[in-house]
Length: 127
Ligand SMILES: [Zn+2]
Ligand SMILES: [Zn+2]
Image 1 (tube, rainbow, N blue to C red):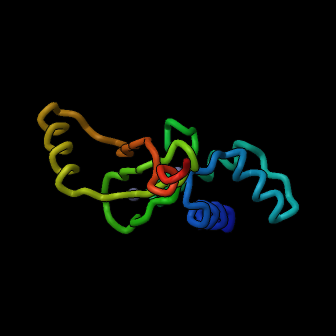
Image 2 (cartoon, helix red, strand yellow):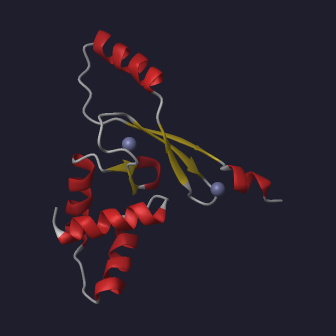
Image 3 (tube, rainbow, N blue to C red):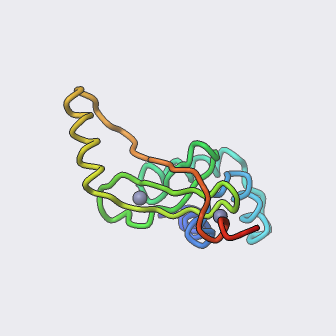
């Protein structure tokens, strides 16, 4: 993995919430004192998603690190609408059911990212 890919992945890991490409670009520029072209950042993010070490949260147009890239799975994210906190959960039983449905319909699955949006526990405590 190149230095840039590694750095971007580390940023996503440390953030614990989805980061947009422009936000990542800003942080990188601050860290390195260099400017990065937007396409460079998008290519890096695409690569990380292809490698399944990160996933794109469509509803936020942002990216998060995958918690267990070492095995093949559907990334299921719980995204808080208020603070952006994102937790990845895994449910092999549900995944199996969805896979069976797809197979039955003759559907070839390429990308598997599921998002649930709502309010995290701490945000619900806010008055
Ligand atoms: Zn995942
Ligand atoms: Zn929250």
